[in-house]
Amino acid sequence: MAKTVPPLTETKCIAAKPKDQDYSLFDGNGLILYIRKSGTKVWRYKYKRYTGKIGNMTLGPFPALSLKNAREKRRELEALIANGKDPIDEALCTASKKVNALSFEAVARDWHIEYNNTGRWCPDTSARALKNLEDYVFKYIGNKSFENIKPVHLITVIRNIEEKGFTEIVKKTRQRLISIYAYAISRGVTENNTAYFLKDVFVKTKKPKHHPQLPLERIPELLKKIELDNGHPITKLCVSFALHTFVRASEFRFARWSEFDLIKGIWRIPGQREFIPGQKFSHRGAKMKEDHLIPLSKQAIQILNEIKIYSGSSPNVFPKNSDPQGFISETTVNNTLRRLGYNTQNDICGHGFRGMACSALVQSTLFQKEAVEKQMSHQERDQVRLAYTHQAEYLDERKAMINWWSDYLEANRTEHITPYDFTKQLLGEDVIQFKYAKLVG
Image (cartoon, rainbow, N blue to C red; front, side, top):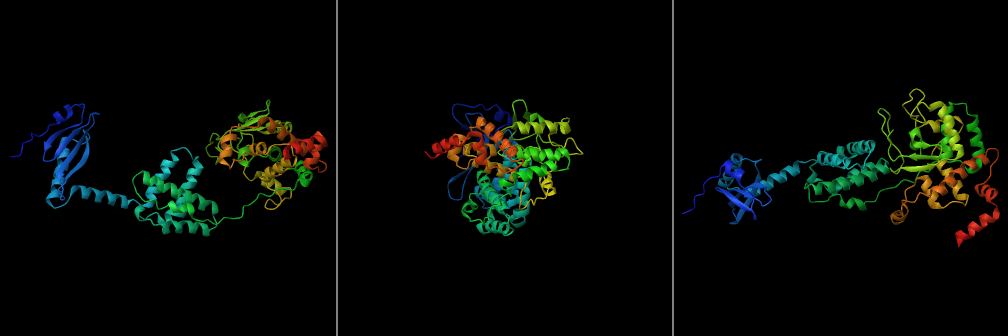
């Protein structure tokens, strides 16, 4: 005769204390309250499966799942068994249906939220990533069940973007699809990494577009045109400042006076600036998202002191004419160059100042390549080398470098002189030959 099990009470369930080993309290008809030695309590249901083996299902934690509700769940499972269905098989089937019901768009949006929470994106990058998914991915596979996505669907997405000629979007989308599938696997949405093969998919590449820059022999012409420009004074000074410092447009456009120490001659560009409401991209700082030190030549400091006459009352170095809290347009420098008679597609653009400075510094034979790259704020591509050099600032050499460039511009005011000849004037032929001999060993 089967042993009668007295049913549990809510009080007895609450009073059950942990012991040295896990143990069970029985309510009867397969319902068990399992007490772990850690003190947690969970409801389990034990029954005989159609295979003859014992099935053991976890129903939920106590007291979140009360004794009354646990008994209701038991009755539901007993009804399944009475109808010839196995509760474990039914649970697996239901879970599978839930996974299959998840659309690609639902999973991708969850991924976007979690990736954004890592802090690796700034706000505009996050918004752009989501918009790219909406424009180029969701419209093709967004409504498909995540589990039903096949490699051919992902290939179609990539090829559709490629045909539009958006090479960078192709690369970003490929990376994001791979990341979305890694996220889905980590969350138990799927066990199949359908995007794994994308890393080996060939992507058409465009010929790199180089920013136009004037040959160095045309520097005297450029300087004369800037000097004679009759535009707004702060615009003219902005162009000169950009030429002398050769930083990126977003780095000088959103500059604040608080970043400058004119006594020490240092400009510290923060990795990320304070965002000004209503001013798009105003949070942008140094390109590599880390503070970047820019030594200032005496000419650059003089330009900044002149700029202060016009914008010293604003927190921003280059405010809008009509809005002291705003910033000059990203087209300011190029518009000025066009007004001076240059074609910014073929002759020179604002970004071309960087190329001109870099070319002159290399031709001077004075400076280490690493110091030039640091001044240009370029990311080291060799990751092994980066591990050894990422902390090196080369600050003393870069101070000399920035002063050399400003002095070189001054030397070109009336007629052109090559970087090598200018260096020879400064140091003499013998010093240059000695330096060259050391370089070649």
